[in-house]
Length: 448
Image 1 (cartoon, rainbow, N blue to C red):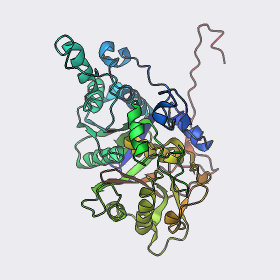
Image 2: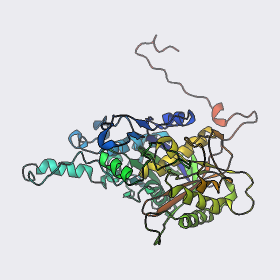
Image 3: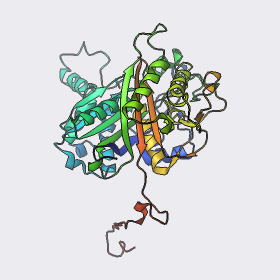
Image 4: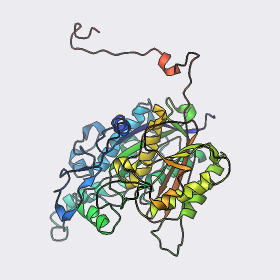
């Protein structure tokens, strides 16, 4: 343990049926399927689409004044870009830091963002009215340019570090995490905001993915299951706050190493995932961290439910962490997408938040919708062991994996913040006196 360790000190987010990480944790431990079918986003029978999707429910409210922004402009902004400001504020506060104290600091901003923007802010055809509506068109364009997803965060919070969006498809936010960790290791930044965001406002996106065979026709996120027929779309806008240990007031986990690579040229085509490239990346990551792969006691997989992706990833995990001698206990395998759907660019950050939740509760939430492991995956199980019921966490390391449609893979190794206990078994935090604030409009109402 070193004062220079990079730690996750704050988390926050919006998820399907979950307005914050506490609600997400409750839904995970209660085994709630957060994928729902309704017409809150568009008519349920539109284009014969399966309406089941993991949706963020409340995204229209935003307090522009709180963030010092023009209401006229923010009304035109993609809702997920607005929510990014909220979750950044909440993640910093979750770390026990006043966001005002970070103004002017060398804080970097790294946002993994999906390729699908909200186009509601754009006119259907700006050419006929370009002269008369130039001001409005400019406002709409400037409000929704993708680069501002990160730049706006740096502007509002007055961060002086690097500020960038990262788009490597489904691995975007874990790639963003890798860039942030490396910048911290190089001393380019003192702290880092890492976000992942993905929302779906246009039904053609869902139509394209369902007709191309990527999405489940049943609308069931049956990750690793024999009946899995693709992924189910999910939404997330989430954030992690990274600091050095000496600066952190709270520590969820320590990031030991983060790396990424790409499959390169493949005879089978660009879009088919490569078990070999993922395996190579995993091995490089634990070697960089100088840890024994047998110390891994939990793996949070990218597994989405696709026919090609899941077997390739399990093959890589098996070869990197289980194939060699010495692994006696099965390696628990988590898959958040079975609970909330595939949040694409947001999935890496969402997975890290799930790991932090598991660390805090010393218990790993169960995967859903797994009845029988598909044959192509069963050859690796055991030693890989999908988590079908809430599982007490065994102290050790965790691997988080992501890969994108174009072949970009990202892998992060983490270890928990082991909680100190007293001689009588109580956690140290439980023995510290708490200040309780009681408010009331009168003296009588404020009495305990």
